[in-house]
Image (cartoon, rainbow, N blue to C red; front, side, top):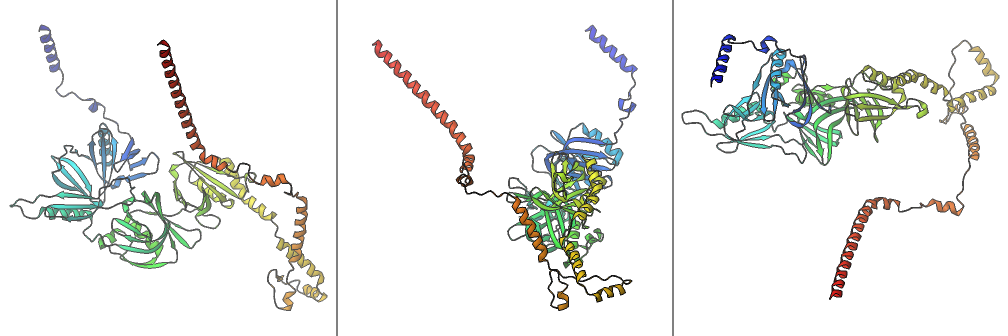
Length: 629
């Protein structure tokens, strides 16, 4: 007891000597914030299985998946508000942007809140709202709205949230129930579950309160969801468009939040939020325009998935359209669309999709091949197509449509540059991706090598065989010129030889005429090779090509005599025609089944032998007993 009193007195004396509010370590040394905040293993709330990296800097927020197949960029001037929510094992960060759009990420730890809140306050001058989640399991509470999001609360904790941009209809089913129907997304697989309808029970107001609570809630939902205008009425319709992927002729109906594809066999409904990129390019034939819509997730046709819709539209086709859009939305479009539009069909198409999806349309860069088109003809795997060169990406059409971003490419390698390894007139390009995938495009005309090499070099892409490629690019023009000089046109030589023969047969009068016109410009003499004129004078100028064909035939006969032709008159050669093992393919197909059958056979034999041995032992025991008796 005396020791306890002594220690208590010592603590009290020490407390009296200490200041009332000692300065904390944070006040002594304020925490230095880094220029960039990076967090690993973060996923979008809508795609929890796809992990990636989120990066916060002064320019904004950038998210990139580990496979580099999906990126999200949010500029700092478009950020309106942040929201933080603990979700059990991890936490969620939601970013509200100008224009009532939002994006949420999860995978943060609870200790990350301090870093993020301090960084957001300093760099973006924003505060983070903390939203607690209700986990009690109760399904009643109050409803409020945050932008275009309906939130259900109980005891100041959020039970669930509904983005009203996904609501297609809001109807009263009976006196106190409101049915919310959601857009059906055809890009989802057959094994994926999706919410299509939710029914909310709204209790009536007290007698001393005015108004209908159910009707007021419905009006708020309809206004924020943007479905007060008849959502079943399409904004515009594009009829008879030819799609190369998926192949067929389709009619496209454009609505406010989705569009429909109507074909002869399949119909699709695609939300605009699933449209990730829009590309417009001129086809290699200079007749059609190609408009590409990139989808994530892709649409499905049976077991086949299509990540891109490729429309082929004639450049000369024109149409007139009347859009069923409010004047306020037309003003926000800033000249992209108008209520009444007339012009080229491909131009009307990209303007409509750019307006409704709120995405820019990418066009090829300044690259031009030897025919002044922004692509090169090549083959990928077993299909021929065209590789288009964009400012920050490459796109291959048609099977399969392949999109390669520059920031996803680790290195580029050229092959078949020398004539010793091939024909010398074609080359290949191999793109090695950061996720260790390889894309190789073959059989590109060597005349395009210099323009392709310069474009890839200017794009700051790493070329593994840079020395060999640079030498090939510098020599490609001289090689082409050398091939042209070595090539001899037999018909051109024949015309020259024929001129010499005709000169010998000319009359002296013609020689005198030539002497008189010596100072005048030389005239081109007319010769006919394939055309047979009727005029007697012109018949003399026709070239006899058969004598040159006879020369070629004599040369061919000499070459054939040099070859040794083996005859198959002997019986051994005749027998060698037939395959020695005519059932080799049957043995190959049955090999796996025979292997399994051999295992079962050995097992059965072992069981039979074991059973026979047991029977023999039992018989021996019985014989011994009989002998004892």
